[in-house]
Image (cartoon, rainbow, N blue to C red; front, side, top):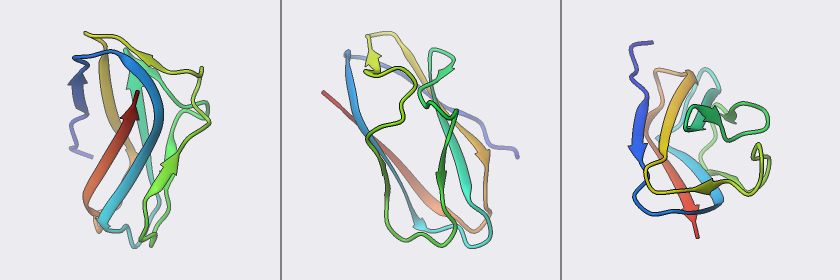
Length: 99
């Protein structure tokens, strides 16, 4: 697809409470599948989440994480992988709420 995975090094530890995904211009043709990996392993029980085509509101995830609670430590690596995409989707935002 030509997309490079987004990589983030965690600076302060915490516990994941929720995750939200939103596209300012939603996908018109296909659902978008995304995976967030913590140190190389998916944080999702199903291995990914889906942002449905034509959706105009955020997808908020509060459960379905692989091994709750998902805990972060300083130095951990988070990576966002786009599994399936839609060229019409623009300006995606992923927000993670950590306590």
